[in-house]
Image 1 (cartoon, rainbow, N blue to C red):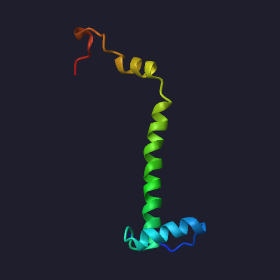
Image 2 (cartoon, helix red, strand yellow; image 1 turned 90 degrees about the horizontal axis):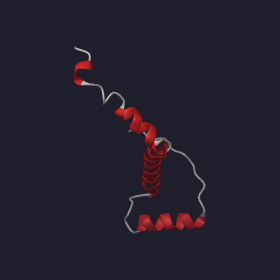
Image 3 (tube, rainbow, N blue to C red; image 1 turned 120 degrees about the vertical axis):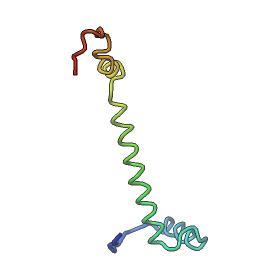
Length: 80
């Protein structure tokens, strides 16, 4: 995957913590740590978006839609 260089502004405390992660060999570089953090955050937001949208559904309405047509007698079903 190709990469693009960007510049960011970060507070001193966070930078110090980031450098400790690199010194502790948790990440090979600042760049890798930041890339990983951004990727994980984007994935988390994507997963949460589905949960948020599902929470907007009305369970009773969804049940009615799911059960629609379930009580049709077998001889009333169209022939294929």
